[in-house]
Length: 252
Image (cartoon, rainbow, N blue to C red; front, side):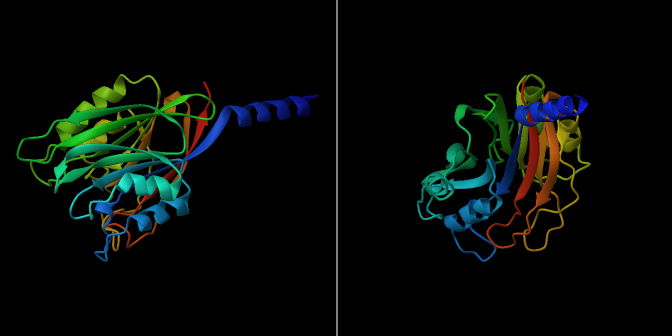
């Protein structure tokens, strides 16, 4: 009898949980360390990891430098995932920004401007809501913070992000190129509202990394369990290495 009860408990846990793979990847406008422009190579890197959700930064859409290509259409076709692009600013006849790819249905999306001085590049926070297999909603946040080493807008940008996260009642995945390392003020701010996937693996530059700039966070208290994070040793396709996290999602 006790064995039967134990097996039933295990079965309930297995049914109520789902494992997902999340990737964050700064794709450097699809131009690799070898200076070659190749969107399909980026798609190949993504497919090799078989993620369910991908947060992309530095995405070119219809720009001259990227051959006026529709990057999202190519990535959707090559990966079989649904894509959402959000513009950070106009660039070379097209647009430059961030994107999210998802195997799950995308049911909501929101572009949130972040504080940026007029002389600096604008920055944004993406929110893309996806419907998981267990019918729960997961809010996926994706961002690329200011890159200036000194006198940066990152602290103000992170303050706004933290305020948004604090008032979000749904399960949360947060990923992106934060342009700062563990121990910095923006990272310490984010640590107060989300759990960081801890790793000491460097992510930038791709060929010989010595900085941790690409990060992944989740709302542990809302039923997400960290199953491990890996920095993929891809050294050519972009100037950043992709980061992949595995998570267990508990049903409501």
